[in-house]
Image: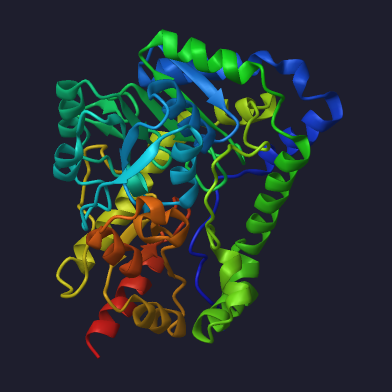
Length: 414
């Protein structure tokens, strides 16, 4: 029996692996100016005065917060994120203040941001979650009125625009990710952008004093990507790995299920880890530069997938759907739906041969490791408990989406 196509495929090509191997043979650091080339290209494409390459996106968040606040100041942020985003605020000297989210968008609620802005606020950190721009114009206006710096976590939203303006450019600093699962993939990496050259100079000076990203760590990420590519190759996945993951999910074999998640055991960090405190390797920059031209094309494919999901599921009672956007403000990293009994729905789908999965993102305002900043965020909690990822990657077939839609409808018609 043939199983489902995989729930995800990463943005890699054989050429990327060849480039990494070639860099080992001839030496990576010989092309150190590639990092500067990337910075100029990113700044040109998003229309900012400057960009600074980062070894990974969360390090960009750390430097952004550290550059904009005084130690001990409050940073308003979404609780619906990975733990390390909160950790970067803490490591940079900030005190997290969690603002609840909107259920449909999974993004920080602009009204909550406005309510929480006080004289003690050092910065506001917003996230454009799942590739959907938050209510950035309203939040940016509120921050300008109060004189509070604004940081945009656009890790999942490179190429997204609001009224033609790229996300990441509405505030003081924007942060992009080029990690393994993002729409531009250098296996590990990121960049910050800003229209404040003095901030870019300050952060670049700090970064350039750091050693390059550890080669052993970087190669471990490349190896992990290669394993993921092999596992998710349709021939192998449909004939074996889907059935393995299906069995593990239905029978709750956590030793296997946890290998498909991140952020399994979140812990508080108060000092930035040494392996984070690095700078981008030139090979990372070269990989990014080769991929930038395809972003809009891939986003268009994702939007088409999202339209099919939306049109066919919008009338299913009990589902919370994301908004349908075709104006460039959503790139649909996944098509995230929410259902109060999601575990039962995902089990039903897996039993019927569909590879969909539960979200791994948490309500960080309720995590024990962040108890000193605990806050009641019921919408973030409900989203964390109910969200399901439906695949949208460009290589995913329309026929697979149709099968998934049919199974979801069958579940609700029982």
